[in-house]
Image (cartoon, rainbow, N blue to C red; front, side, top):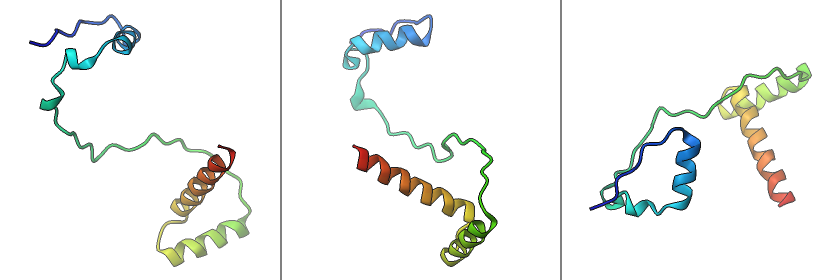
Length: 90
């Protein structure tokens, strides 16, 4: 028989509780099932970015060669560079 999960006044109280408790005393993880969330998308924020027109045209050429939208290619380039920079400074 597992312990009963208490009711919490707010998320802060619940966080405090689970930080100090062993969840296996409350839940039978062997009965857990994997949940797929296929429509879950990361939060995005629209920004305004000033880029020289020539750079945009070059980006569009590169994107066309890869058969992807230029804005998607720009996100790929940014993600790769961010990862590279984070690995260098680590």
